[in-house]
Amino acid sequence: MKTVSTAFLILAAGLAPLPAQAFSEPLSESSIDTADFAVWSQQQREADSVAAAARSDATIPDVEADASPADAVPPTDPATVAAAADGIDSPAPPEIAVTGEPGQVVETPAFSTDAPDEAALESVDEQKTPDPFLIRLQVLLDRAHASPGVIDGYLGENTRKAIHAYERMRDLPADGEPDPDLWNILAVDQGKAMVTYEITEADLAERFVDDIPRDYAEMAKLEWLGFRDPVEMLAERFHVHGDLLKTLNPTADFGAAGTTILVPNIGAGPTAKVAKIIVDKARGELIAQDAEGAIVLAYPVTIGAANTPSPDGVLKVQAIAPNPTYHYSPEKNFQQGENTEVLTLPAGPNGPVGSMWIDLSQPTFGIHGTAHPELVDKAESHGCVRLTNWDAATLAGLVEPGVTVVEFEG
Image 1 (spheres, rainbow, N blue to C red):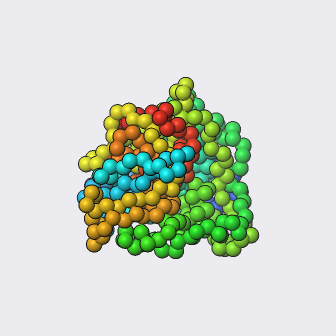
Image 2: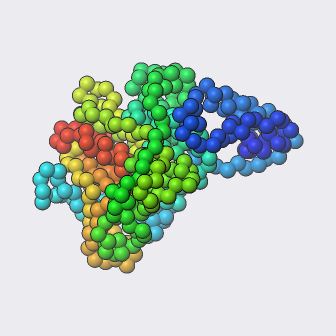
């Protein structure tokens, strides 16, 4: 079967070009807030029809298309992923401060099962132009607590999982694809998908870290593994990809207080207490339920690789640790580079386990954040369950240590 770009097919087949918005539409507050499923789906049908007609023409040569974030499959071979970690084969366990009990920490074992997110940096897919309708769809899903992960304007697997989860929440036929029934219910939320935000002096007073080294000894010299700049900080605050945030605000000075920027209107998080967490390892998805079994939220997650799998069975949430530090002990764990001494890596959103750790009752395992939200479910961990920092923080506020159960399936 020929793999070709739609634009090439149109030109090669001598067909009339589709309207420009069939491929991309300029991003603006208006184009996103007025984006509609009927128009978007018609554009998809027209593009598919043109592509199908052109592919059946034997005079058109094969042309390899650029892989999109939704289509490209990152390498999952553990050796390949580990090699990208610059010599890092496994992580060290974090020191977990117990919430409400100053001075106490959760006992961590000698062997940690999770690897820093840097291990998968080579699997990042190249971005294409985001779609206004898909941005609106993702914002509405996020606001309904069916998280697409990073809002980026692409119809990738994390967005399909969010659609599937929302369909389950609303007792719709669950296929994970945008359709009229989904949109009719989701669009009942009449709130704007985009809002403006004014950057404040307090925002710029954040402890930014211009350069975060890969070497643990150098990292341990820092006091804080913070955001690199205001763009990264604001992107996490509004659940959006940093590149999309800059695209939405092409002339903005993110380093100036008083600058007004366009951001997703993410709304408030859920408030129901979580009695049970289901980690679906096959789907790469976390579903949280209340005591009655109703879905409170659904998040995409990164789970363990085949040789370092996530747990099986039922565990319990043991403790909550915001901004955990990261303990490195080469004699107990692994040696990174030439580092032979025990090190404590500082806390922060760009730390190896992000800005939140939810400790589980099986030693070495936890649910935690990440320094690279765009990689959630696009690579494999070394056993732990990895979410975006904001999803991990929301979940941590709803679970109850010693009460909330965590069931691994798949």
